[in-house]
Length: 217
Ligand SMILES: O=C(CO)[C@@H](O)[C@H](O)COP(=O)(O)O
Image 1 (tube, rainbow, N blue to C red):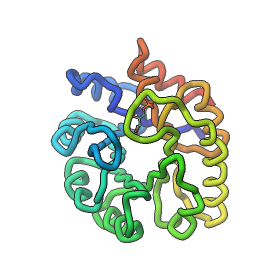
Image 2 (cartoon, rainbow, N blue to C red; image 1 turned 90 degrees about the vertical axis):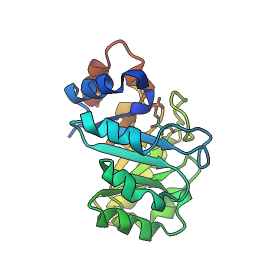
Image 3 (cartoon, protein in one colour; image 1 turned 90 degrees about the horizontal axis):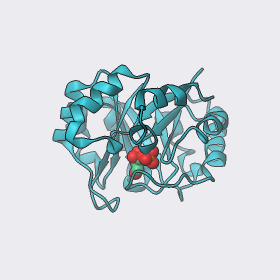
Image 4 (spheres, protein in one colour; image 1 turned 30 degrees about the horizontal axis):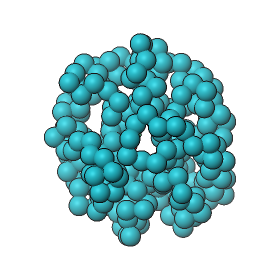
């Protein structure tokens, strides 16, 4: 078993988005990670529904859409129609998380929950069986290119224990500051999906880096 790799398109060259998506189509990437930032939940604005549709038009890999927005329930249908196969909402943005996850599944998408670095995995104890993927933020969300938070290894392993104890099939995704040094340690701790942005797109050969991340375990 190898980790699934989800390059974050946020770090790509937006002036050449079609070319960047076609590059990912040629690579060993398993998903295209699409970061939606609203300038309210996080202190940055990325892009929205039309750009997500444009990525989907060229993508041959499933899109994993990470909603860093307030009131995500108001936009689920639009992002699903824009091509999202995984829709991830933030636990911190959802007062009715169970209802939101049910809505995602009723649309035929996989339901993800992201947790910020300060959020304990114990808050997922009553909901984990309903969650297809937990995105463990290993940086404070809002920007690419930040330093990986070391506490993430133990957090992932506590989450893995919770998932096993509930006999759930939930995948663990780690997002932020992922590189070739921490990827094998995250995989050992129990991560299934690794999101990598700047480490992939700032390299001279992104296709090669994606393969190396997959083989790094
Ligand atoms: O959601 C986020 C940041 O908020 C991430 O998906 C980053 O886009 C990952 O980029 P790197 O940290 O790997 O540059």
